[in-house]
Image (cartoon, rainbow, N blue to C red; front, side, top):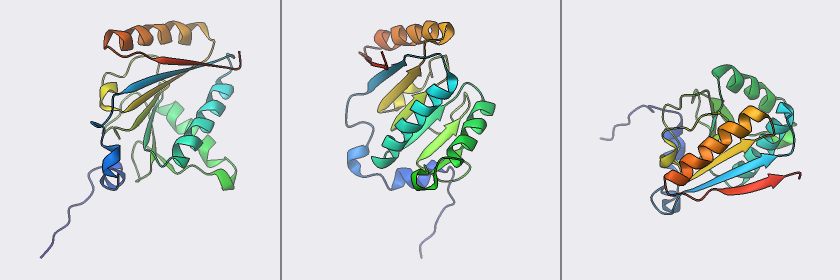
Length: 167
């Protein structure tokens, strides 16, 4: 007789289907900073959408950390309004199983593959992810906080890679 247990989290299904090559202990962690040449929030979110499409094509898991639950919900609506042929399967706060999860400041159960941090502060559990991505624009506050996070990653022995977009 076999028994099944209910899913504790929407990511559980996706985690159980990961090939062994995606075990987060297999490779060194990397950190990427994408620095955009704008101060426009819609431009930052358009770049995020392009990045999520790429992550989705690569069949990777991704947690997106916003600065608030409200911004995660607002961006959820943005993803639902993308053209039907480029829909990105996602969920908010792990309400349903999906490879892309949108969160406010708190991530309950990390996917352990890719973290996109849009929050101005360092995510204390970033170390459980294989890849951490920071997206900054040219607003003074985001640049200042991004520099602090960059220093924090360096203090952890990581060497972040910086990509300047549109310069």
